[in-house]
Image 1 (cartoon, helix red, strand yellow):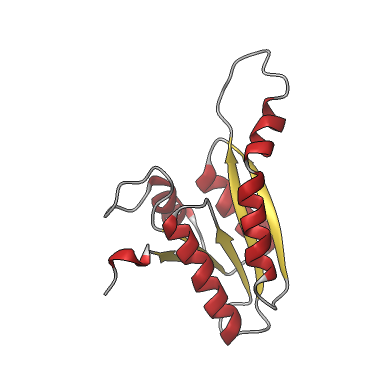
Image 2 (cartoon, helix red, strand yellow):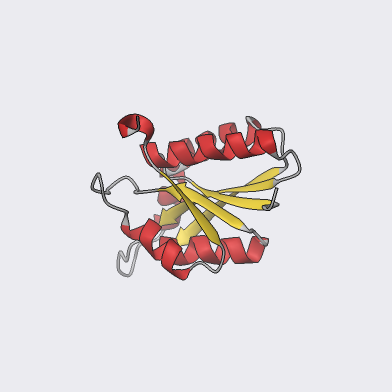
Length: 144
């Protein structure tokens, strides 16, 4: 298979769950592929005096991290989990893919706040900025 290291972006949305399912299918076809499961902890400006803000965000991400660990454990392939923190999810995803040497990014068509039927802003930005192939997984509910 042409891809050897795959980044899978996950935010808990239905399309990102489809991205995990797609990654599992690829893993079954290519036992030598490695996977990097990522979740972006989006930080917002909270002004001065926001001591402990990062720890609160990380605590809130614990359920998503558990879902990523479950996804990584559900495939026999080598895999790792990365929690990315920052203000630009698309930049973080593309940078992580480059740093990890990935040759494919799999992500959902839209995130938690996306409008059905449209490519989400993060998905759009990743497809626009990524130097590697991006596979967009759609929520399977409306597929025939």
